[in-house]
Image (cartoon, rainbow, N blue to C red; front, side):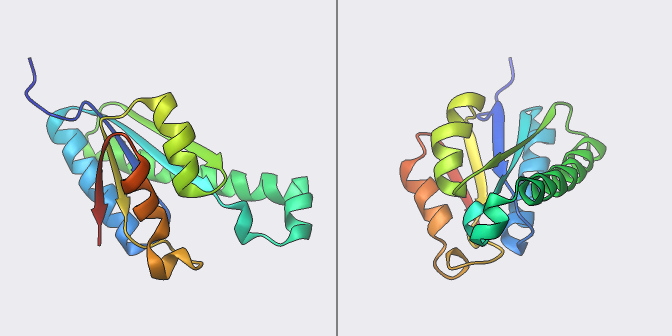
Length: 144
């Protein structure tokens, strides 16, 4: 029987430095503990103007780019030696979507996120990470 604490790790990623540190930690831990690794990224519709939100081709293109990007993170984890890696892309407010939708579907033991977002007001206040730490019903590790 394995003595690792976390059997399933969920890491939230964007392109911020903090997020990439979180990903690096999650990959290392998943490899060492032979844990499943779920890499999630959320398409934030509030970063788009009203015309972009109404344009289904625009949103489809943005989501497609995000899916391609997250598959690179998945490939990185697999090349590092993580045996079971899954990529998840969704839409909405990152903190709320991860806590209310992704965690109940994935059932992770640990959520790993960066403290600062890559853009927007949450970059300065860390509101998404704070939200997840407060409302997630699992352990949360926040990287700076």
